[in-house]
Length: 425
Image (cartoon, rainbow, N blue to C red; front, side, top):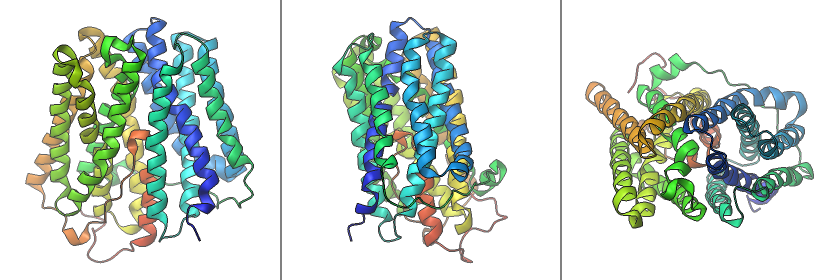
């Protein structure tokens, strides 16, 4: 039996939903500039999204246990599809910040519902294929959604209406499915100190990656040529980063399978910092190089999250995998709440280039901390490392937690794996 057939309807919903989200993610900062909202306000919008995202991840299991997957999906889709229209009706800083937080909450809940459904409908043998197809869809439709910015004037009504239509239509395939609903979701407890004890590098790394990537998602369109005035250039710039992030996942992940993952994290963080400096140079002096360098930045910066999660999975016991990955996702979200506020303050004072000064400083700090841990603690043996599996954090979904559910099912605790009381690298 074709392993994609049982989840084909879900994948259609994913494609439509993320196309609408891709369009919103680039449209709102551009329109905010047109409305002359300040850079700190745009940063607060980004922070509000990730705050809502964290709330949605925690809230969703309780929602699904109460009403089921299909009703929960329909309810959150209705909320998410209304948000773009509210942005048009309530064009004030407070209105856009509150609406952005509601969008983050509803989309996080939708991702949790979809990805838990995909996980349950996949066998151990087919999960790798399912996740790969899911990643390809993520990459394709996020990019397509961002490029839709060129279809109409962002100062008008049509792009907001298109985003609302896409998100609302995403509910139709799920609502009409005849398949059985998955089992209710189990709430996962999150113990930050426990995660810090299991893997300091992963915990600090995910917080730092959130600081950098959250700022990019919220403020990247403001860095693009002409500070967002040319929407086509803005769309290409943002899409180049996402495509680079997807391309960089596989080689860095496979390299990390054969060595201490922390060394790959150091290398990728240093490359991301170097690419950030190159972006500043290209924007000021050689704009023709901007898109190639932005792809390089994405190729180094975006895989860092999944490298950090993989490193934590190497150290965690089998029964801790889902808790660890869920906790690291929330740690990432916490960093992403702070990142846009900090970066927007720097941009307000020093100009758009301060965005990538911010990311360069964060990545250099991550590289320095990880190098310190390498010098202090021995590496996890290659025999205890779990195979790296790509997850497109560039799409801001919860797919690393989805993949950890697969690992938890396949990797039982063994004496050779990390002890629960050890403070591991």
